[in-house]
Length: 382
Image 1 (cartoon, one colour):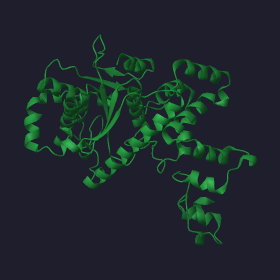
Image 2 (cartoon, rainbow, N blue to C red; image 1 turned 90 degrees about the vertical axis):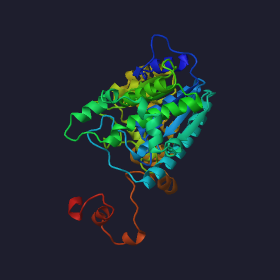
Image 3 (cartoon, rainbow, N blue to C red; image 1 turned 30 degrees about the vertical axis):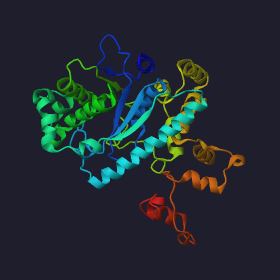
Image 4 (cartoon, rainbow, N blue to C red; image 1 turned 180 degrees about the horizontal axis):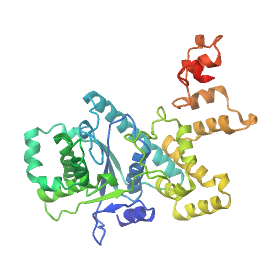
């Protein structure tokens, strides 16, 4: 366990924690939660995916928890207003899709790490909290959780205080979200001996709610902990995510491998070291060597190429599609890809638009650009 936490520290990935002076050695199972408010995870979630998988590399069992129940409520953490309500059907479909996405990513990560001689002795478990929260009645929930939860403490959570100060306050539904997430931790503690929750730095209040619940229901000295990861931000400190409207999706039908590759390839030098430590399995010596080579000729973008290649292969299983589109956009005539590989590579890209062949006959370029929506009207193409 110490090795896992130390690895997070070494990579500057341990933002906050409830550990005291001594980090316990007897933690065997950790968990992190994923919000199904969209049909895909994004690069912000990738930090947590990587952290949980790093736990497996260090011999811990990792629980990847998808919020099939809590997704119906919406986490109010540091949101200016209440999230738009999603239908039960929508959340169900998103949950199913994300669980499959996590399963496929773990498969890719195991193959990727195995090829590099990295073992993953720890096991993974992908769960849906609707499997227990969906079966408990409101009265039972109040008896099991409500009576152990102090409103005065709940009101002190930073995300709650900020919403209370705004014109649009916080609803009772959102206010109780922390109780639902707290119950998740208690359930996993009781049924899977899970004693460490990992999440983004905006989740600390909800994580502490779980620790408080376990201490009140079980024993005050129950060995349960929380650790947060730094949020993924750009040079201006702006978070990447769904709510911010700048999510880089992990699903290649929403963000093609090329667009994904380009996102990391276009990273600024100021973020390069942090991203290499956050999103790769390279050790400190390998990263130092890459940065050293990069600094000799920054214009060659050696560091960005290594980062983009590593992460794209890890999350998409192959660099083929990204390289095909890169050849098309930036390569020479001699390296021009075949038409079949082009079609395969462009699917899911924001740069790809398909039209019926019958619309192409004698149409002018301006007509086609307007037809596929690249331009709002033919006049805009001129």
